[in-house]
Amino acid sequence: MGYTESLLATNEKILYRTKQHWMAPIFGTIAGVLVLVGGVVLFVLQLTMGTDGAVGALRTLAFWASLILVVVGVAMVGYSYVQWWVEDYAVTNQKVVKVAGLLRKRTSGAALEKINDVIMEQGPLGRMLGYGTLKVATASDSTDLIYETMRAPADFRRAMLDQKMEFEQADARHIAAAVIASAPAAAPAPAPAQPVTMPAPPPAPAPAPTASPAEAKLRSLAKLRDDGLLTPEEFEAKKAELLNDL
Image (cartoon, rainbow, N blue to C red; front, side, top):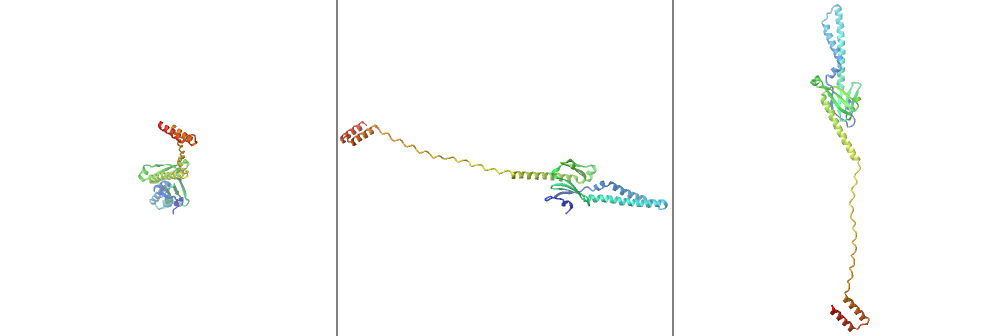
């Protein structure tokens, strides 16, 4: 496992990885290139010098000076290339990170949710050779990131912005799920009230039939007969009269 992988958090993974362009070490050590070129030029010049007397001594001095310059120039350029080789630029599902340094590691970067924009700059030479500068604008202006001489800068920029969008969408889904889970469950609707059925009132008693006048007279005559005030013959005679009247 590399040094960059050791910096990852739990469930964090690298989604895009790149380096600076191969021109970056040259731009980063112009002094070393000049020293190397100067040593080569001085070495060629001392070959044209004579070997007798003072010229010979000067040639010897020029030889050693050119050798020293070449060694120093190679060391400076070599160190720059080693620094370029160990640098690592990565986009994970949580952040963008840069790791630099051979013996003393330096780590810098920003969380995806802190990135506001990624600005890409490319000159004519950069477009021809495929390198450019990325300026990562974060929520804090004091921590803006500048990645110079990046290889395939458009791909690196796209990887950062795509993963930032994916991170924000996933974060929004998690928030929505937490809100739904914390909301109280809706109480069930009460059942409709059942109508109360009142017992029907008992039917009113039918009115007693009213006796007709003829029946009342017959009853009165029967009572008089039963009391002995009328003889059966008189009762029958009165009864016959009433029936004739009907």
